Length: 350
Image 1 (cartoon, rainbow, N blue to C red):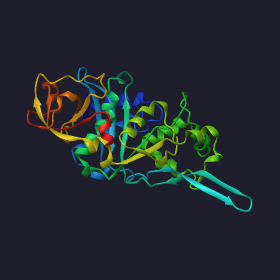
Image 2 (cartoon, rainbow, N blue to C red; image 1 turned 120 degrees about the horizontal axis):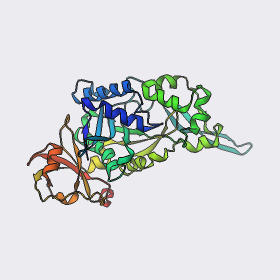
Image 3 (cartoon, one colour; image 1 turned 180 degrees about the vertical axis):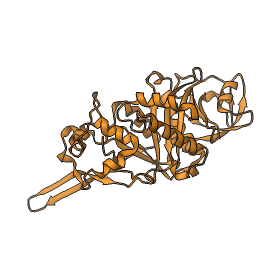
Image 4 (cartoon, rainbow, N blue to C red; image 1 turned 180 degrees about the horizontal axis):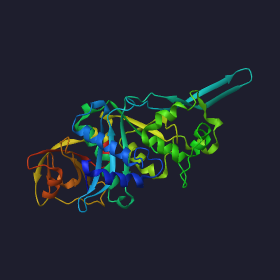
């Protein structure tokens, strides 16, 4: 399994991923025209014909044995330039009276554009049949190597919007308690329109005044900042890299937003450059040993690649790759690669 940028002939594969992503993954709309536009935007980002602030880099997880696309992930250079970026800021409102002995703290939701200009980690989806063998780890964490290699293309801070809670029928308690009062449509329809790029239009119709959380249903209150069960591993992965909840949630399903300074992300901060040696004796990666693996990326831009390599292949300044690994990474003997532990280690906390 390896990571590469999307290519011009990837549209059908991307559309298959979009059809399988389900409700809540708004960045993968089940619409071939929109997926075509998404693909073209990434292609123009990698060939540098698009302004830096408007670039989106799409990366595919590929199965070398079948040439099948197993998953997709993305990096957004900056959000909120072409379309207004909306979130609810989770705040507090205090009502107090010393005369009657009342001091009440109430959670509030303020419609906000505060995250405009941040870079974004986006569009993570892995096909169900590939969920295992560290594929999710490789897919998600591979983006940090790109951030480490090309920091000048991104802002100081980066966010990730997490898929909010919805039940087995695709219903969002938060939407039912708030959004439905302003739109005569199902959550799945609003979710679909968001994926088509209509989020700003919908947000314009949302109330501009603070929402007092206690006025929502109990079920809705419980979902504020709560992720979909299928998204819990992705959130845990982000938290292990140094991301934290930033008190912003999605305006439709109340999914949390998490953020970090790019320079402080564990895989960015701890990654190092190694000189490549090619050897048939290089140890094969043991996917069952989750703490014995390295993320290894080449230093190319348009032909960016990432694979998993055994920690036993790395020395102080050199890393020994098999011929097959070197071919996938498009590197030769004496080339430089970037590497970091796939998962956080005890040393990362030092």
